[in-house]
Length: 169
Length: 343
Image (tube, rainbow over all chains, first blue to last red; front, side):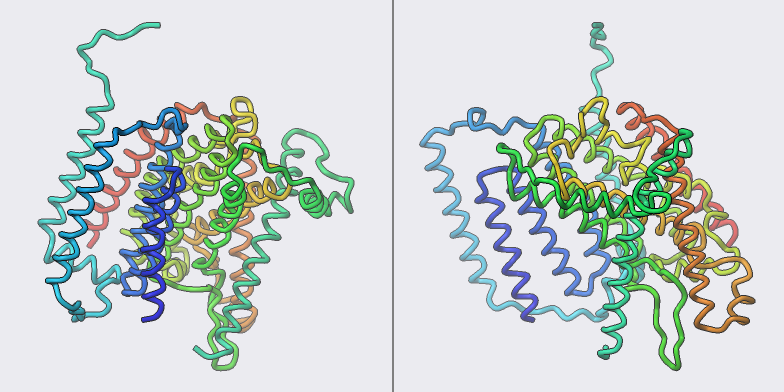
């Protein structure tokens, strides 16, 4: 249990650093650390497959792409957008309301009620695969269609319109 | 877990770590000697007999050189970059089965640090993490060439990771397990996976070249375009760490390829040999065979480096996305159909 509290503390600590870091590249690096602590959480819950997939997909692929994009952007002080004073006040107000809503909803939730899994080895690859491909086959396949449509959309956005005349240099 | 078990694991980790370092050190020497052989030269031959102490001399030089951190660099991340590179290179060896289990008395000593049941995915995760060392170092140098090298490394790694993952999926259809220890055991007696998955092996091999940044895919450090690529600003041991990480990566990926596709520590006539020399020498011979396979792969890496010229960057991307990925998907489909028909 103490391991959990330590890791949970680290997760929250790093996620606060993500939003408070001045340099966007630093905040991505903190985000990587945050995801790493999530991986440890999954391992603590004996969900090995989820842990390693979180490690590969989030830490290894998505955040690399985040870093990649940020490195291509000019991050100088001059290019930073200057927001008007009114927008800042509105942002603080909106954030405050969100915090109040969150706190009140958490308060009404009451004490946490830990869910005990019927099968503690559910997180292992074999059991997870059986559950995914038997009980939840339809949602699983539908979500893959969702991903496919996102991919097709990205390709469509990236390719140029064939009707436009080709630019020759 | 008893104290002796912990001590054995600890010893095993240290031995594997030392072996990786020594192999990486002497890979630099082998690389230069092999390059010399291919180009009809002598290669390093001054330090010690046949230049045997050249890696020691190089290492000494790396340690003794002045450390330079550029004025405009981000100092902390500039140091984190090479450290991460060498860290991710070293942790990959934890799941590789180096040999059969030793049996001493009634004690079974596995020659594998840990046999987690997601072993392949662990290797895959470590590989995908490896790019951070290059990216962080390249960005923190605050140099345009370094940044371009880092960006190239990132996009190259991500592109080739996809086909690598897809080729592993086809392998999993054949083996039915994710644990490297079990995969090595299954290949006992000529059931080597390369016979069942030849296309998958070639895909994996090409992707391993790309993931370790070896020629013909070493675009991140392409010196004709980018000076030194991501390590342009690095000097002394920090540069040494980057170069060292590449050789350790090469060693680990050779070990992974030997385990996944070339039978690991299995060799023809293994049962007969083990029955004749006893349960201690037998596994040792298996380990020696495994290392022979690894060295053959390392030699192959070097052979390719000094034979094939570097790709152009658009050719690299075309190969990854338009040839390897469709081929890998076709491989999965064909493997699936064949397995379904045979059952």
